[in-house]
Image (cartoon, rainbow, N blue to C red; front, side, top):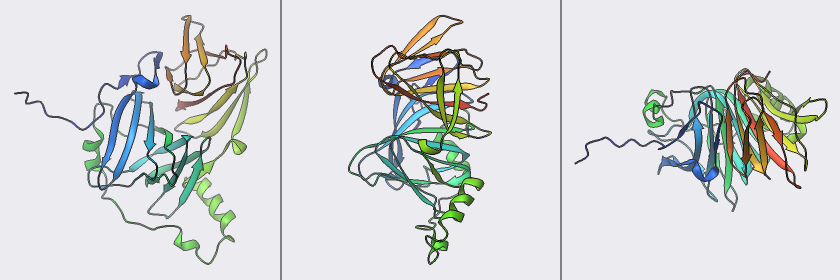
Length: 291
């Protein structure tokens, strides 16, 4: 009889140690949570000690909170880019509640509990990006959860703002952005950078902190970029269309379809190419330094 202990952790997760393409159907599937915390369906593309790439999904009407085993408590920069449906995040300690639609981001930083909800009749899918990594890749989340505080009941909302709304809208929003509270970020307030002389490319940064930089790029039909390079690890996630990424130093040519991921190690020159007659849109994250 096999006496090997079974561990409740994802199986077969790719180790990011070289330029590596992981197809959506190759990502490791994992069911996070239990009856008390609620369940989340994860697609885990890969990880290393610095960076990871995964999606979580919530079924229509689905949600997650916390239990004694599964604790949604992290001391990190958390970046949730909604790729499908709608996501609502609640910080039970502060009472902050923020909702985002597809193409928008919910972001915060620092040690916080958070609960997630899908208040729609459609499936929700979210890029679950964060830094720094809270544990080594070989340590299961259920084991590391034993080091975290007990779950809190908290507040249903910002009870401190009752009788002061919307008068306190501007001041509460400014405070949240400045102090790392839970906020929504849209394309309209992304930080733009244009790279390239012959092939100018716009990169829209939704977040850039000391821990991570993340944003999106849209390539017109037939467009390409000039070489880009970062001093840090990078993941590229194809939102829609067909994206090619060329590595001129090694002559590698990757093709990303919808929801595929490409990992690039630090200091890897790369170019974005769109060989189709449709837009190619992708999201990216660099950990920690963008330039």
